[in-house]
Length: 108
Image (tube, rainbow, N blue to C red):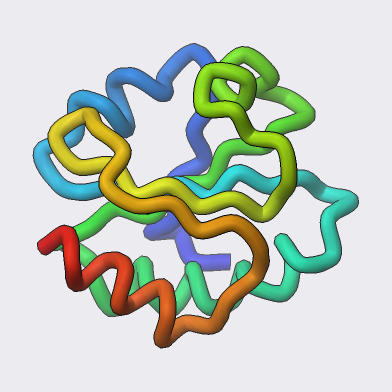
């Protein structure tokens, strides 16, 4: 796992994501979720590739229920791209690195 991927929770979500000067791709996931584990390596690679331009953050829905409820996370993995504190794009389900790159590039 890349050290460039932030682990964010209910307590620090606003500061880490909503108040970020850079766009933030947030992965809502859980330990028991197979597809979440499948996309983790792609997120690590994106964190390296976009270092300094975009932040990659993960929110464990089992431990951070209020943030998950606030953004209506009903199935995981669910990825939200935030820019200037607003959701710019949503991706539900596991997708490839190329699709995630496209999502990020549109926000830049």
